[in-house]
Structures are given as C-alpha cells and as structure tokens.
Image (cartoon, rainbow, N blue to C red; front, side, top):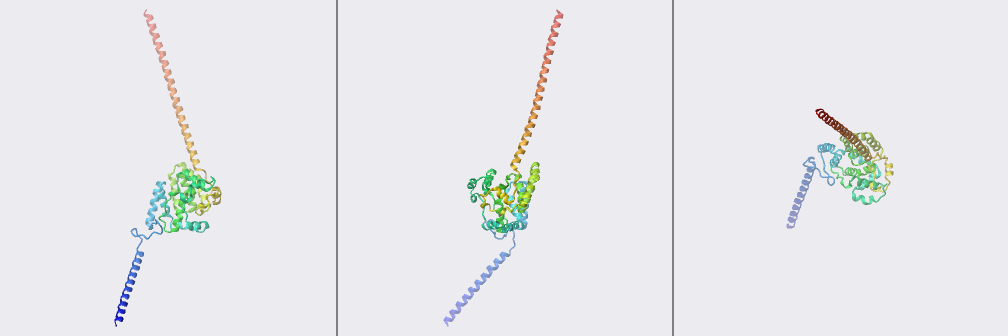
Length: 335
C-alpha cells in the first residue's frame, strides 16, 4: 500500500510539472506570436536583416527620399545624401531588376556569391601603381591619385531590406570610381553629371536619373557642353554597353584598358579637363586683350593730356615774351 501511495504521489507531481511546462511553452509561443503580429511602427521595428540595416516604412522612405533629393540638388557635394537617395529610391523594383541582371550573367553570379569589397587594402594600391600605364589597374589608381580620392570613403548600405540587393547597391557604389577611370571623366560637378547620365542609361537606378537635375545648377557654358556633347555620349554608350556591374574588376586589373572598353562597348568621351582648360585659357586671353585695350586707351589719353599741357605751357611762355616786349616798348616811348 505504501508503495502504491508513493507511486501515485510521484505520478501526480510529474503530471503537474508536465502541465506547468506545457502551459509555460504555450505562453511563450503566444507571446512570440503576439510580438510578431505587432504592427511595424517607429517605436517597433522588425530585427535587421544584416549588420547596420534599418527597416523603413513607406512614409519614412518617401520622406528621406524627398529630403535627400532636395538637399543634394542644392549641394551636390553631399555624397552621404546622394547615397541615401540611391537607397530609398532603388527598392523594391529597380534594385531587384539590377540583381536579376547580375544573376543572368555568369560573372555576375560569381560576384554575388563571392561578395568582394573594393578598398585600398583589397586592391593593394602600391601594386596597382607598379602596373604598366595602359592597364586597368594603373588607369584606376592614377585617376584616384589625380583626383585625390580613396576607395575607402564609400558609405555602407543601410536602408535596403534584402541582403543580396543591399550588396548589389554596395557593389555599384564601390565600382563608381572604376567607371570614372575607364571613361576619364573627372569628379568636378560637370563630370559627375555626365557620368550619372551614363549610369542611368546603363543601370536604370532612379538616383542616377534624378541627379541630372543638377544640370540646372552649373554655368551656362557647362550646360551647353553637357547637352551638346556629354549627354548624347552618355545615352548612346550607356544603352549599348554591357552592364558594368557584371565586371569582376578585381580579376581584370592587369588587362589593357582599351581592350576592356572595346569589350564593354564604351567610347571614350572628349577630355573634359582639357575642354575646361581651353575655356579658361580663352577667357584669360580675352581678359588680357581687354585689359590691354583699356591700358592702351589710358596711355593714349595720358599722352594727349601731356601734349595738351605742353602746348598750354608754350602758349603761356609766348604770352609772357609778348608782355615783356610791350613793357620795353612803353619804356622806350617815355624816354
């Protein structure tokens, strides 16, 4: 009997423990389920999908896109806001389409699988400086040195939800200087606008198209040059060229740069720095000619003034001689 009572007591305790455990598990599941059903708000955001990711609601995305677009238009030097504009306007359609373009290409798929990053350490800039000048690596690093920029300044992507699409945006951002190098376009405002037009035709990212509104902030002569030379070049080459995101730049650094241009279907545009230098030289010569004409006129006027003063002096001396002569004659008459 004692054994039966003890066994019954143990069974009762185990049943209570099992019931309590199941109740606790159901409670935790219910809490987690309620947590997942909580609406997405400013005070409650879902967990990030990758390091530094910030999920955004549609109103927040629109507000950041409008604000960054306005300030970037007023101050195109704000690279952080241009990057923000690129992220907030790229998804869901545009960046997904760009990722699919990479997935359809064997090299693009390898890039998405390997996820390489472009930095001064991953590329070894001293090694690139040792390459022959006609190679892609030497062209790239000489462009960096001439423009005074570094590949380490590209901001991390934060506002694109899909991790793979976020990498596509990061890759585009880090390859931007390669596009500058192979086209030869400098980082002056006019050169950036021309390259953004090329990128818009090649990638279709909205930010690159919105950047073209900066055309209205440049000088009239630069605007004429953009519409007359560089926009036609950008549209023609951007549409016919292969997607530049499918180039594994790290693997072609020793390749001839002109061979790469030919393979991609890119024509080198007219040298923008040389065009700007010629304009500055012409304006300087016109200013010097103008200053020379003004100086000549001033010298002539000064000479005429000097001649006039001398004539007046001679006339005054002549009058003085005549006056003295008259005085002598008057004295002679008195005698």
